[in-house]
Each structure stands twice: as structure tokens, then as C-alpha cells.
Length: 370
Image (cartoon, rainbow, N blue to C red; front, side):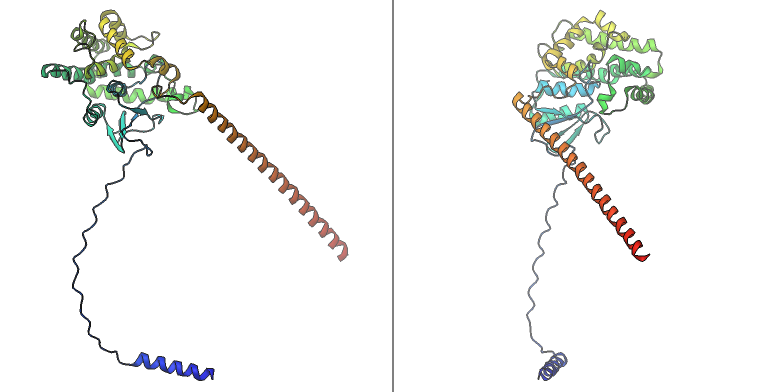
């Protein structure tokens, strides 16, 4: 019976497969207009600080030194401007590993966007947050400011760069640089200093010669620097700041560069520092006023090398809690390691027992065979 049902089913299937197709009239649906293509999504921001907070400026610069907050006048310029402008910012401790897309330091990240070059940073931030230190200046003063900033950054800067690179010990000893701390490495400072002198000195001298300053005699280069300092000294005269009672962008740029001269360790010979102290007392006064106004934590920075001494620290209770948590984690880790050691020893013992058992069985078998 089952075989007959199977045969009937097979025949029915065969008929269905060989039957002519039935023609059915179908109305073609009218073509629907193509849906508009979705708008391309903006590219995701390529930033290193992915967990950023809105409107917080994340500053990437060089590590601290015991002499000045930054070895770079451009980095010090940006940080000084941020403090004067009253913007919220945070230094990113990157151990000098990162550079901007332009290959420079400093650069900032703001709301998922990178902005590089100190002048561009100040311009962009000024526009976004409506901060302008030069709003008090008239057109004539703005022109003077532009000319002086150009002299400082395109001439005086290179005189200082020449002094730093002609003998690399100048920068390491003059600013008491601890490369081990700056780079976040365990390589001995002696080795780091050797490679730094070799690479920084060679590259720096090439740049100085390419700029033009480096082709002159040493005494001529020092003279260039003294002339620049004299011009700045004559301009500020007996005023607190270059254009009156309030600091402007020129004061920021001058301070960032003059600090690199004035604060060089006294044990290291530096003709420009000596000239500034002896013949440009008003520039020394400017540096100290800007330091007090913008960096009340200067001593703390240079002592602790803390990149973010301006930020509030967690209260002692939280520190103790964090310390307790760290100790608990450490204890747990040590406990886990001990347990692992214990289990490994137990496994070894079991393996030894199994081995002995197998050996005994083999011996008994040999006896039986005999």
C-alpha cells in the first residue's frame, strides 16, 4: 500500500512538472522614483584623545623641565595664551611621541578636531571662543605688534636655536633636562644624552644654517640677538606691558621666547642671558610679571614636572580610596599568582604520581611475562 502511495505521488509530481505553464496576465507596477541617496556621513574625527569633553582644549607639547615649563617657546606661547584667555585646557602626557599632521609641536585637539601651529591655534581659538587679547589696540599698534612678533619668531628665535645646537650640552645642562623622564623610558640618561646630542645637534645646526643665521661668525650671531633684545627693551620702556597696563599677544610671544633666555641655569655660559640681565632690566621685569600673572604655579611645575598642576587635584580621601583599591588589586594579583603556583605544583605532583604508577605497572607486566 505504501509503495502504491509512493507511485501515485511520483506520477502526480511528474504530471505537474510536464504540464504546460498557465498564462496569467499581470499588470506591471509603475516604476517608483529612486529614493535619494543618503547623505554621506562626515568622517569620524581622527584624534588621539577619543574620550574628549566638549570645549576642553587638549594641548600636546613637550615635557616639563626644572627651569621652564616648556623648552619650546611656541608651546609656552600657546599655554600662556590659554591661561590669559581663561580657556579650559588639559595637557596630554604623550612623552613627546606625537606630532601634528604638519609634523609639529604644539598642536591641540578641540571637539574632535586637530589644530596645529601656535599662531593658527591662537587665531582659531580666539574666533571660536571670542577671545582677543589685541582688542584694545588700534591699527598702528597692531602693525607694530605684528612686526615685533615677526622679529622675535623669525630672528631672535634662531639666535637662541643656534646657541642650543652649537653645543648640545647647552640645552641639557642649561635647562636641566632629564631625558629619561621626558621620554618616559628606562634607558639610562647617559645613553639618551649621547644620542640626543648627536641627533639634535646635527639636525639643529642644519636648520640654523638653512635659515641663514648659522652661516655667520659666533660673535656676529650673538650681536644679532643683542640688537633684538635692545629693540624690545626700547619699545616697552617703562610700561608694565608693551602697549600699556594689559598684556597682548606681543607680550605672550615675547615672554615665551625671553623665558628661554632668562631662566637658563647660571652655571651655563649664555651671553644673551647676561646681556638681558645687565642691559635690559625692563625685559626682566616683563618676564617676571607675565610669570606671576600667568603661572602662579611656576615653582610647582618646575619642581614636580606636573603637566597639569593648574587642574584641581582629587581630595585626600579619594586618593586614599584609590590607593586602597590599588593595594587590593595588587593583593588579588599576588593571590592569583600564588594560586597559580600552587596549582602548577599540584599538577606536577599528580604527573609524578601518574608516572610512578605507569612505571610500576610496566614492571609488574615484565614480571608476568617472565
